[in-house]
Image 1: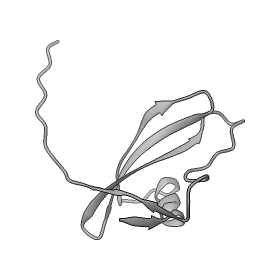
Image 2: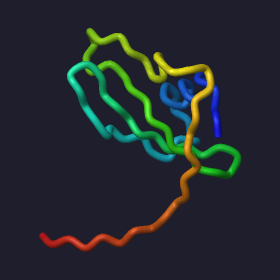
Image 3: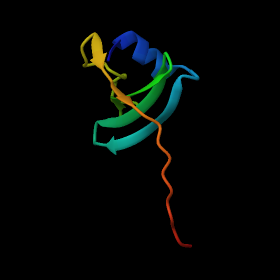
Length: 85
């Protein structure tokens, strides 16, 4: 499903209950890439966006993207992990 860039920007900047999680998945010299899952109309969607890595890198979320951004529908799954301490 495609979402408007401004809608997704508001999710990243605001303290919105629709965001399920927002994690850093990559860190380069100039940009930090985030993966975000959000809930919209009862469904979950995933998207990625980048922000500047330092205060000198002026890159806001979705800055270089089209006005409509495709997001993949994702489904909540429970995973059991065994680890040893």
